[in-house]
Image (cartoon, rainbow, N blue to C red; front, side, top):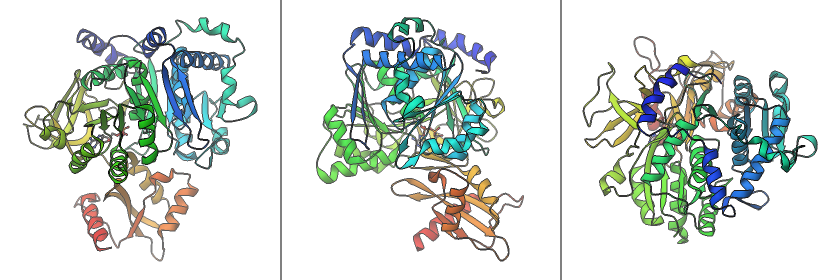
Length: 546
Ligand code: ADP
């Protein structure tokens, strides 16, 4: 897969010299865990629909991923091909990633919330050769959705279905024609450390999703210092309630446990009570999720008194973290609450440390992990002194290697500084606090809403003359989307009409604005740009008045 090769090569020398790129892959870590602890549980996966729990030891994880790799190879998948999987947090997810690694193929995890509109675009851009979907999840028929877009996807050769029957059943992948004997033939087919191994779409600010590409070097160089800082090791049991198709779930729910030789516990539908039960039952020591996960677990434990005594660390990341919540969560859960900031493009860049004083723990989003640098700049690009708010830029080992087929969208400058689209302040000791965003996205419960795409679609509605979508604060989800619309003369539009329209356009439900305000005109700057900050203020006032 095409990357900006020259830039990558230039980075490589410095990253190797610094000891950040260790030039290995997850397969090296897997082999080590299989050799050391073949019978140790690698994955404990819960299915909320059937109540079934699947446990895979390291030896079984290795075996199943070998078998799936062989079957994918028999279906024509080879080095550099993209394999997409739109799956909940099921064991098949982890097995597929390892199988892709074993073939040098590229894993393309896709969120289960994506509907035909998002999926069609993403599979098309990636030219995915294989897609794996569930037969059903939360009542939705995935094969039917895929059938509706398949004729637009000439590269897609196979659609495999977890819980499916017949030829295309995922289970068939566990029985390759070559059988167990073929396993040895896979050795040595894995990726080089600088090959692209993951393609993960992130909400665009340009009207379409962007395909973030990572290599083993960029991904693993984030996880090693992360584990070291948080004192994680083979004895840790990692509970993952966040979607594995987000970078957070993928890196810290699939890759990290294997790297440590620890155990991953996967939750497919987030319910706080069930999360607490799974943590207790598995003796989980570590978990990670966006603010609503922390909020709901804290509320549950505080209300019921049924705690999570084994839990040592909860990392909260992916959305603004209210300070009061950190203190409240620590008291209820009795674990260290670590705030982190990161992006799909670079993983967790900053975290607080378990040893930090109170003031840092509760009022910052942490300091950079080794191998990463941060700076806060003014609009002219000058570096700002401590305490001043500006644009946050990041540079270092875990920065991605580009956006698929859209190199022009990569905001990394020739010196390696990546412009994050976030606003921050940095204190004298290098700890940051995210203060806002310059990019136009809304973060609803850790899920990023691509505002430009939603506006673009609403703009095509016959009743809409003008539209602007803004985030309004929400106690549980952080933000929700509100659409401000100026109607065409004589037209009308209700919230239900808007929802029905977006549904018909097959846009993921989580992106639909939950509030609609009809206005005579939208506030503009003298140059004609819509003033979203004024709409946010208005939305807040209208919300209070409601
Ligand atoms: P993830 O998969 O971690 O959610 P995304 O790339 O989807 O990553 O979203 C990254 C964005 O989430 C950041 O650019 C920032 O706007 C927001 N974010 C992440 N962590 C924090 C934090 N601690 N505080 C505020 N915003 C955050």
